[in-house]
Image (cartoon, rainbow, N blue to C red; front, side):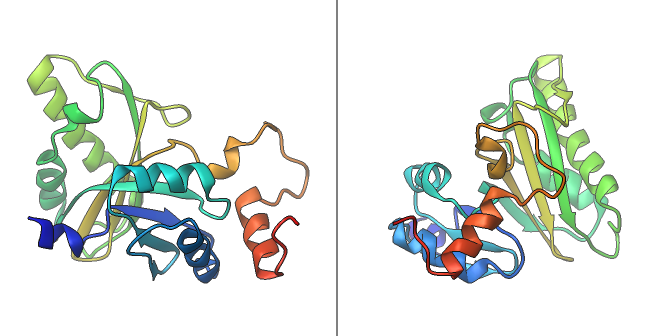
Length: 197
């Protein structure tokens, strides 16, 4: 219901550790609702328009993730079942491609690659069962990038709205010998009080 959704963030903007207050201030300046800091991220939003506004205008966020599911997760079987409860046909074409980013862990799931593989299996098994074909894995340029965060007992499954880290949206494709991601540079400039004027 409406009350349930009001307590649940729809979007997560990730950032470099320590830059959470800078990102929070930027998102508030963009007029986004329900802005709140986490570790390495800021949650916000009450509708898809706010997610796209952050995607378009944030200079400090590394990624903008749209949450699709959250569930208790004490085992690999619980991860597989929870991911499988999402209707993936709403997000990924059965003949498309996906990549899975898995962060965090638990007693049962200690390795990110194991968590990512379990997540991928749940998605492709569901789509293969429904459509007779399955999406491919493409870690470099997927149609959809799925993010799973496991905090020991709860898993949050999200879709990356851009599909790539936002520092890669610029015009340059090659970095110099000591690159500084544009999103981190923008955060540092905001901390110094410079806003481009």
